[in-house]
Image (spheres, chains in turn orange, purple):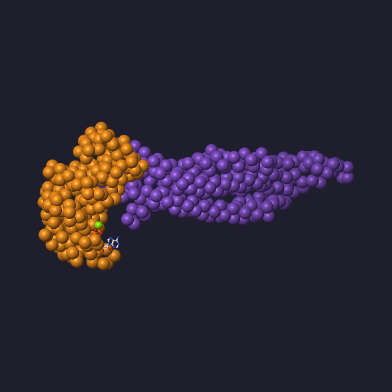
Length: 217
Length: 285
Ligand SMILES: Nc1ncnc2c1ncn2[C@@H]1O[C@H](COP(=O)(O)OP(=O)(O)OP(=O)(O)O)[C@@H](O)[C@H]1O
Ligand SMILES: [Mg+2]
């Protein structure tokens, strides 16, 4: 489902990652860990093909980095849900519209959008806040909106780049519980983090990056 | 419906980047106002030149011994020539009358006989009012028996011909320049509105919007900005025309076509410049 074959990555001619190979199967939950600047975000960016490998090959679902056309990338991304430390919500629209946005962009009809958005907002416990604006929400609530937006198009995997990085302990646990639940329903999760505490509390497979290479731990 | 989504996003975008949109619309109106002034100026100069041209005529004097009957025959022969428009025969008697009207004295006061020759006044057919055609025609008319002299305002015609070319040259180059300035202005101010909304573009791309889908709200925005700029510039132009007509020159003409072309130009420039800036932005990131 996600496969890295001897992948090298560079940014501005600086080699960031060397000879990375791993495979993630359907419905798996894995962490990418490592010190700051190790290249965790870089791996996630290569999965949603914001960055191409310098060498090697990446296979995501039915797309290969070696053959994918630029015009196919939007369709690849519709199968992925991405969340970030800084939430990336649109501040000029309410919770409902933020989540609906991901479906409008793919041309879904309004009744179907309503049905799906209500459902995912219930899943992240935000049904009662659907008319609120992001600035009226706590950090944990904002991240839950971002998760709702990530799952609304039923992706096969969630890519989470330090989703708890801006949250306190209690909110981090809440986010983890939601991710665990989504994972139990069959969606794979690949999460970059350096929160050792969370990793201990919610143990999963770990891909450790250091000095540009990856080891399983 | 994705069209309505794009339309809504386009309009929302105008509201989100209020200042930038305001700058865009006012600079568009300014540039289009200049373009409109220029179009109007050209139309009026053209009109005046056409008017001058229609007054170009040749005066053909016949030999003094040509009588009216023969004179009419000659004017018929002239009328049959290519490039000849209206032809008027002036008999000896009419010439005398004109003399009297002009100088207040009759020729018969001084002389026993009328010394004035009969003549033929020739206007050129429209489209043949150039020096080349006029000289060509004059050469042909000289060959006709009974013609003694041909008079026309060679210098006046030369002046108009030269003047037209300069006017057209200035007109076309300043028109191109103004349109170019308008595109550059819009391109840059639309970039401001795009930069103000890099977050929405980033999110659109993340959730799998196609390039054309990302582009569409900005094209609609450009369309709206260009059209509003055109409407404002049209109103300003119209106001200015009213003032000029009232205080300076009542003969000033303007037409619906001028305002129509401003609107068309504004929307086309708006869409093209936003297409250029959004495409460049999407390429950069
Ligand atoms: N846009 C960029 N321009 C230049 N260098 C970059 C850029 N993005 C990342 N890098 C470099 O690439 C390396 C890996 O960055 P990356 O963001 O993947 O690290 P990370 O493991 O996610 O770190 P963090 O835990 O701090 O988020 C770093 O050395 C960083 O300096
Ligand atoms: Mg990172």
